Image 1 (spheres, one colour):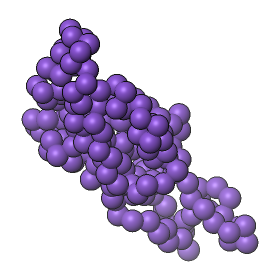
Image 2 (cartoon, helix red, strand yellow):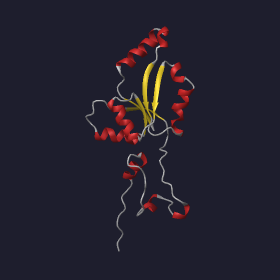
Image 3 (cartoon, one colour):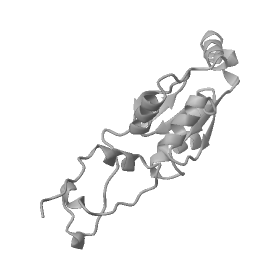
Image 4 (cartoon, one colour):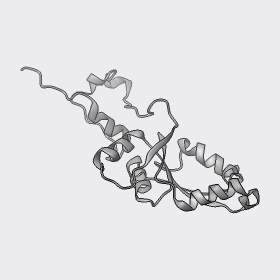
Length: 163
């Protein structure tokens, strides 16, 4: 997962300059709208705990954190300017760039949170599924906007075996 931002808004740049130039102005809070990739769950703790402990306010930021409905939506909202920052899967960001080469306001990744994707295929032991090729002929269930589901497009397609 990555933290995204679109072009910094002038108000953010001016606020940052003011905070550096005059510590007395640090009392003014810079508003930041932050979009999660999904609901308020474990992975969001990184951001929610920081807000609850007052770290953002101490840094002069008035952060609003909203739940999301998938990484793709988060990337699109940051690109549209509806949100200043977002937490999303890198695959969703790459897909946005590939599908919107001429977008005027492309989000970029500024921080990696996970070394590896937490996406996984789960199956009961009795299913006999132990490796990717065991998925041939099986149906997978996942929401259309799920980043892990999009990753399955990169797996080789099964080939028909001779009868």
